[in-house]
Amino acid sequence: MRDVSSKVNTLRIATARATLKASPETIELIKKGGAPKGDPLPVAKVAAIQAAKNCSQIIPYCHPLPVDWVGVEFDLDEDAIHITTTVKAIYKTGVEMEALTAASVAALTIYDMLKMVDELMQIETVVLLNKKGGKSDFKNKREGTLKAAVLVLSDTCAAGKKQDVSGRLIVEKLEEEGLSVEEYKIIPDDAEQAKANLLKWSDDLGLDIIITTGGTGLSSRDTTPEAIKGLIERELPGVAETLRAYGQERNPFAMFSRSLAGVRSKTVIITLPGSTGGVKDGLSALFPFIFHAFKMLNDECHETKNDSRSDQSRLPESSKTSIK
Image 1: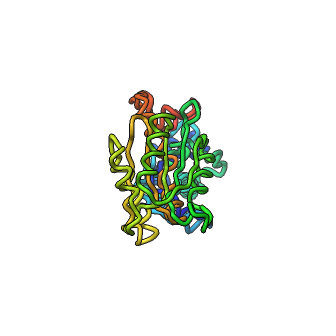
Image 2 (image 1 turned 45 degrees about the horizontal axis):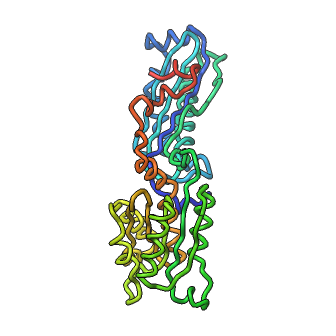
């Protein structure tokens, strides 16, 4: 199985469709309620729901996940039955396999209940129509390159007694996400030096984002939150809460982090712990979702109802007839 432990929970939605070809006589038989084993559609609906809920027991590499909703719809054409399944879950991985499995099992159930009256039936297609909710939906789609800086606060690293790992992890992640790292600096755990660098990078250089690492704990030298709090014009409490909540699920000591986040002018400032584990967790919690902050800071329009269209409007023209 793929390791998804670093991912965050998001609302995942997937829609699939299976098409079962049958004779016009068979379609009429269903409509009139004359099938030998009874109406296959309600049975197929139950089968689809059960299949979605038990997908991980059928497909080896699927993760067991909490399915929140399964929708099943049938569209009877003259010589075909279109089965549309939609699955929703708030989890770390997508539900496209659940939707595909549900549609497949529904088609097989109908086939089983009608095979004695139509030997020429065949399942023609099982296709994924739409999926959303994964990280790709939150990727940075803005034009231009965001400029970033990384500030490492560590007495031992600044003195050359230890190699910086946490700061380099941040630099690598920022570059991986397409940002340009304009500044990377290691300083002692000193509030005044931290303030001077942050003011220069935000006010003089106008950088888009500054991420610090170190100095968020409880020791006498951990003064990063105090140094930065006075510079922030607008706090982002939800970001700080997310960092702690994400970390707490993976390490109980995350409760002691005093990380904070905020905005100075149009510069996003975020403080992360000094430990490599804390930095890794923080970066996983932040990206790619933090990119939305820059959209808001630049007064770019939020998605309207017309932009955030229904699943039906995003389907290919050939697929829309299957959705009621």
